[in-house]
Length: 561
Image (cartoon, rainbow, N blue to C red; front, side, top):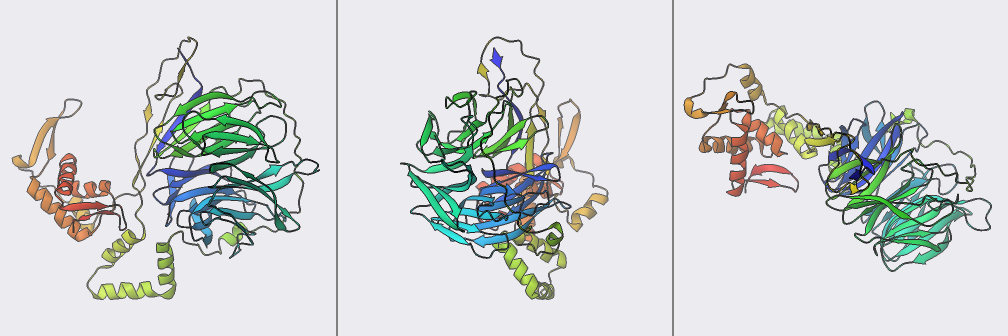
């Protein structure tokens, strides 16, 4: 009694809430970048492996992929909660993200976009901020914005796209800006300067702006999600064509793409209540939108992007439930394609000089993404790190101890990530709907992929020595006997609570701080204690106030003050 409407391809457990995601294309490969509350931007390959990440000083709030230098690899624009706006590039050989440009705004960055807005053949970089401005940079080498647009309230969203205005031969490449107090503005470049074409005022905040043909007439419309729980579709002149009322949850994020292969673009909406809703319009020159299907997760969906698959397009989305999901429409290729006319003719413009070639990339100096990176860069450039190493060595610290401490101060990365892959006919809860009776295939068991360890725990010299020495025989009171799942008798080393407590206290006195609990548990179990006993004792000591965990920097486990 079910009809499959979509396929959940995989889930990926993120370290923290996700606020932004984008797909980077590089050398015929696709990479997913995402970031959010843990102030990190992650780079994931097509095997769902985190291959790099970069820490920021604020939440990663927006991202936008675009190829700035024409080398076939996208750069990514990133905006953070502390006001940092950055351009980052994938190093094709090392598969690492490197910083190319940085600009610091006074307040958080809410939106970022790139394109040839000034129509001079070069890519302009644009971001909107809580400081009530839009800043426009005419190249990646610019130190200051070429234009600044001012507004009465915070800029919440911005986007670029082609729009055909009445009585105009060629479409404009317009900048659309939405604000917290409900203003929608269309701006073009005329005679080399920004020119406001029109303003439209709504009663509530504009959350997202997209541009695309959703009425199937060959011309692009403006699609908005607003805080009054509606999706609004407007003409290029700002006239309302259609308003879709969302019954449950405010629409926060939008994606406009053809997800079922019929040439008509669907509206994919991520909502505050965790629902993902797909609206389609399968008729030419029509504004009759229908809810095609929907699904729901635990909490709000903050961003949606699309991933080109081998045969069809995949939807990737994430939000406050700390999970990235990849789904695809189950009806791909089953509908008759619409013959939609192409009425927008994009004018050719003179190609500008490339911003930065791959050869230039090897010569540039990497721009740090956070204050710690800048501190280390300045110290290293000034020669202070050598002096610091010398003075600490004279105080009796070993180079290994100094190196370990600097590493803890410089970066504390998440250790464990998880991906879960679902077979074709597995149906997660709440993601199927009753329909005509059909005989479903036999459901295959879920395939669980084990946690991927990004950083292996560092084994101290004493522990390496312990590993190669023969183990002492355990006394009867130091072991516990039981049976595993197969009924095989096992013996496991344990220790009394006092001895474990002393070991933990001595360990933390030596280490000062341990970044993560898995590393903490691993180091203590390496000393001959059972893992479950160690975890229980750590929890007990935390409850008794002997040790503590801090989420603030320096982040990790330490002795209680």
